Image 1 (cartoon, rainbow, N blue to C red):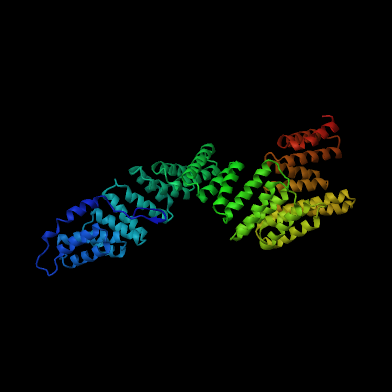
Image 2 (cartoon, one colour):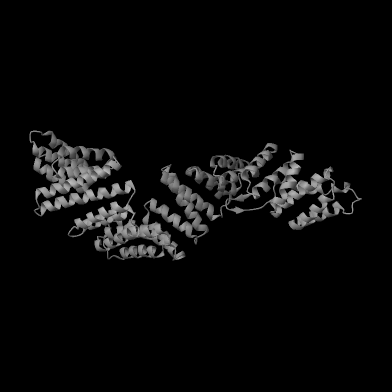
Length: 547
């Protein structure tokens, strides 16, 4: 049958049926006149009823004509063909099946009968039988697009996407003006993650139906995924924006277009325009979680890019209001979780640490297996004035008991390593004993080792253990770990800086090894190259060493 995915659209099975309609009128005069029931009379009545689309009544008349006609008569097969056709049009696929099966067993190359039989199988959701019958239709006439189209759709529903694509492409060659063919081809290509081809298929569909906003939405979605995949990014970006803009021109009140366009603009870091789209989305539907959550994320991203951190600014207040509105509107657990996480991170970025701590504490209470909730709760407590080291450690240890996933536990161990390192260095500055400092540094290194065991390529954990080892005076270990971190993460400015410090300490322990000064100098220069904020360290080093 001819349809888009998700909605049935009935139509004549074949243009050749028009010829069949005309010739059938001249067939039945040869029927026997001795019967009490005149089959021609009922057949003629059925034709008129069929013309007026009164298919149920037409079917009744045809069944009367069938009973009154001997099976050996040629006209009997004509009636079977008509019963099959009318039953399919009426959606009574079971009634079509037996007469069409009987007919096609007698006349194996009857194109119209096979096409109607395939339609009947499809209507009964007997996909394999429908596909096999459509293939018989194609064997008789391979120049019609509909059988390929229908086979393609059936393969799609069976999740056999390569076969769906092959048949839909053939349908497109035979009927390049049909938007439905290219729409469904685009859907199949999307399932195969062939986003560039899908965008092209949807683009072809928009040319055939330029007033259909959904086709432009599909094209925009495909181009967005193509862009995220890194496939011809410049072209994908242009096509994405043009498609969404065209969709909006056709339907400015489409919530889906506003939301998807906003997401695309976020990916492009065009935050101002993204905010415009999300604000429009919240106006269209004030009770849609997605609109408020995305608006909050866009506002937060814009402030981060512009390095605005005033918690009392109007835009900061609007951001928090939108996060809280998203939490209020969320109906799914993951929505509440994501909105609370976004709110907490924004509060932390604004240095509203007491508020952020409350948000993350709620998150750990309601979603105890959420790794980022525990990690952020620990770091927030570490950033308080004065730092709440014990509270951060408590958060990490509680998180390890609740989070069962290995990757999540490794992330918490990495946070604990940073907290123990911070506690050790803070204790040193306030006069605690060297023994206490070393004890905390040992705990830090053990925590980082747990993280590295889970992921040997965890650059942050390698950097963390390198820093802790450096503080503990284990300089060779520190240098080794820091070099590994730099190998894994190119442009890791902080690790380059700490490696420079480790080389400097190494020289201070053995001033005959002047090569360490040069190595320190090179590391500190790279730190500045990747992050100019480290210039102060490099300047002080040059002043002290005379380099």
